[in-house]
Amino acid sequence: MLVAHLTNHLPEPTLIHWHGLRVPSMMDGTACVQTLVRPGERFEYRFTLPDAGTFWYHSHHNETVQMERGLYGAIVVAGPDEPVFDRERVLVLDDLKLDRKGRIAKTALFDRHSGREGEITLVNGRSMPELEIAAGHVERWRLVNAASARYLRLSLGGRPFRIIGGDGGLRDAPLTVTETLLTPGERVELAVGPFDDEGAVIAVDSLPYRRTKMRWPRRTSWATLRVGARAASRTDLPSRLAVIEPLLPPGPIVPTRVVSLGARLTLHGHDWLVNGETHHHDAPVKVGELQVWEIVNETGMDHPFHLHGFFFQVVAEDGFPTTPRSFEDTVNVRGRKRMTIAFRPDDRPGKWMYHCHILEHHAAGMMGHFEVVR
Ligand code: C2O
Ligand code: CU
Image (cartoon, rainbow, N blue to C red; front, side, top):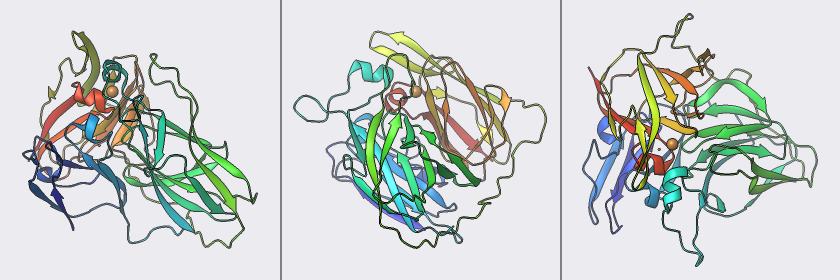
């Protein structure tokens, strides 16, 4: 059971959303399920934690300002039987856009269109930290992308590392890669190391990723990782981490719903749409009934699609069936592409939502409400 007391000392209302935690609808922290917590007021969140994994919480009101200013944090829920590592780190990544006087810049019209990116990168609130890992050690890194809009194509100086988990906890088996894409809202868990070259300094960078034609991407530095003196390792990383039962039977995939992401030019720049409207009201779904949603991106820009309250499996990418290896709550939908997701709502009826996790797009309408009914 987690009990969190929110006391609002801000001059404006706020709410806390528990991103990725399977809480009851009433505890989801959106304006659909509770009244805004006004300045000076208190609210108590109270729920059990059914899943192990890396989650986060953040303001769910005036996010483009409140989250840019840092109203978020990570939550790690440990399972009964976790793999053993030499060390664990939680790394919350964000970027900050400052004005010429070094204050947090006001949201510009361009931000509403492309999403706000800033030139200052932050790891747990600090700029360019130097991390150290002992040679021979393997560490578990839990990463959260808390940025408003920045995509992180993470690289550790080109060296291989293993992905061991996603939004919904451990994946089926470790996957060795040299980079991984982390969109706003997403989490990834990595096994980093072992490295042999004592004294080496490894760049923790994000590689250029072109999520919109309006922005020319660059390589960006986040931190450095120094390989320290050798130490004995006690890491025990099994080759099977979790059992991910496919939600869909083999065979053709028939979507039960299409969620189409679009845009419309208006006098104040852009509206971002779901099925042709801002703040779309979508049809209810039934507890226990398998959902197969096709998320269609009609725009030329990527959008990280986030579903509140329920983990899904990605079952097809642009129409090609995939084998689900993990559970997710956020998935990138590339420009002009489509992703098909499947989930089975468990017995938590009430009001839920989904939206693009680029905060400016969510604010400009790219979201949908739906109800889970018994
Ligand atoms: Cu982190 Cu409504 O989302
Ligand atoms: Cu978007």
